[in-house]
Length: 208
Image 1 (cartoon, one colour):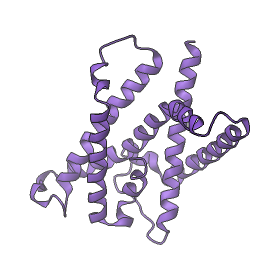
Image 2 (image 1 turned 120 degrees about the vertical axis):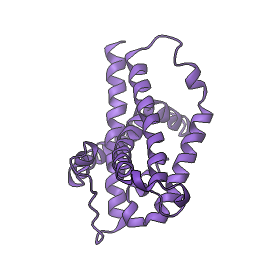
Image 3 (image 1 turned 90 degrees about the vertical axis):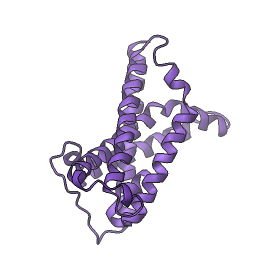
Image 4 (image 1 turned 135 degrees about the vertical axis):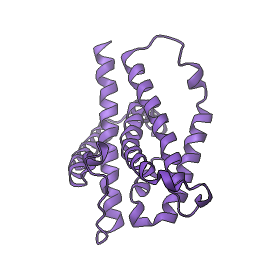
């Protein structure tokens, strides 16, 4: 899903047909993800809610709502795959919902990934046969550089204006290579993943 996210954000550069099929793939993977993690629903009303668990649960529920809004609004706007289901009268509302859900989805999905960053890093260390101080420092330095690039890209791409609907029309520079656009959005994803990761670490320290 993380791999599909940047090209999905570049919909005008890839074309509508590619965007619709990528959106279908994203929705299918999201459904599969929830099927594989269905026990999460059964545990919602069980156990104590720490600050970290509360943050994760709120993020997950918001992301769930967002990922429902995306395909529904996308189907309503479809000009290729779901033309039979196209609801012409609701096109303006669907476009607004889809824009809002797309950019909040970018933030929430990245933040969600960051919240689970500790588990991912532990798995990677296990596969790499232990913890290396030099490797850890190198990875942290690389992450910081990507995060700084993410701040720059967030401002340059005016992502904040789309998150809060100050601008309802996304600008695409068709003279810029697709690779540059994707790289900027990957950096923004890393920025919000870092925000999630360090939010979880801070909350754990405060309650340890």
